[in-house]
Length: 73
Image (tube, rainbow, N blue to C red; front, side, top):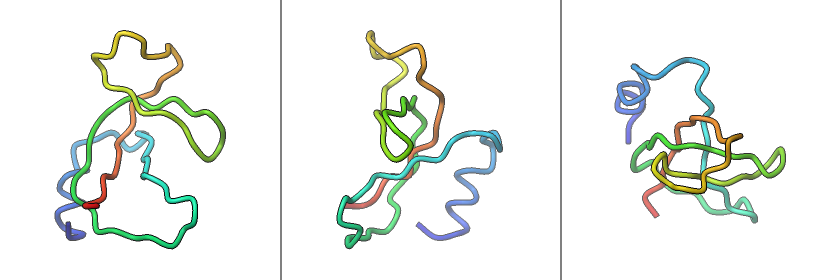
């Protein structure tokens, strides 16, 4: 995904929406962006949390809307 494609994908989303990226605990792997997805996010700590679909029956009430940056790999 290019910068122009990412800008276009994010253009209609609220400026206050949380942005979440998938993590690699070693910090030594990188991947181009494949897509963005809208879902709900529940933080478990300041550095990680859980993703929930809006149709999941057991989504915590504390889940917040977020945009997830999805890597190719």
